[in-house]
Image 1 (cartoon, helix red, strand yellow):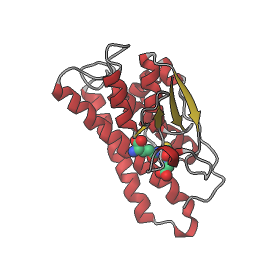
Image 2 (tube, rainbow, N blue to C red):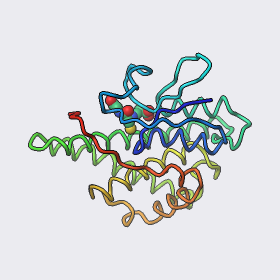
Image 3 (cartoon, helix red, strand yellow):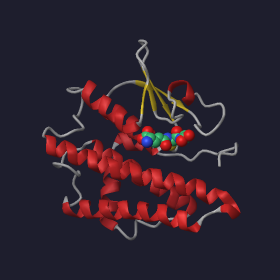
Length: 218
Ligand SMILES: N[C@@H](CCC(=O)N[C@@H](CS)C(=O)NCC(=O)O)C(=O)O
C-alpha cells in the first residue's frame, strides 16, 4: 500500500491525491502540518517539504509533486486514464503548463508568509509575488479561451488540468480567506473551466482546507 504525506490546504499534495484517485490506486493519506516541529517530512525529504510518497516494500520515498505525478503516470500506465497525451510535443506542453501552475502556487505561498510579517512586510516583495500569480492566472485564461473551455491539451484530461485545477483551488481558498486576489469575476471563462474540473469526484473529494499555524515560521 502507498502512503502519501499531505497537508489539507496543499495544492501540491492535492495534485497527487487527484491523480491517484483518478487512476483508482488505493493509498493511505497522512495529513501533516509541514511547518510544525512535529512534522515527519525531514525524515523522508531533506527539503522538508510534502507531498511525499512512501512505499511499503523498502523502496526509497519520493517527493516533489510533479515528480510524483510522473511516477504515477509512468508506473501505472494502462491503469485508469493515461493523464498524459501520447506525443512528445503534447507531453512537453503538459509539463510547461505544470511549471506555470506550480510556480503560481510557490509565489502565493511566499505571499502568505509575507503577509504574516507585520511591520517587516515588504510591499515590493508582496507586489512582485502577486504579479506572478496574476500573470499565470491571465495566461491560463488565455489558454482556456483558445481551447474553448475543454481540457487543456488534446482535449484529454491530463496532469496539466490537475495542476491548473489545484492551483485555482488554492487561489479560491486565498480569495475567500484573505481577499488578496480576485480572478473569478475577472476571468469568467477560466472560472467555468475550473467549475467543470471541480465537478469531478476526485476534485470534490480533495477540497483544500486551511490549517492553523501555531508555531512561528518566519
Ligand atoms: N515544489 C514542491 C513544493 C512543495 C511545498 O512547498 N510544500 C509545502 C506544503 S504545501 C511544504 O511542505 N512546505 C514546508 C517547507 O517549505 O519547509 C512540490 O511541488 O512538491
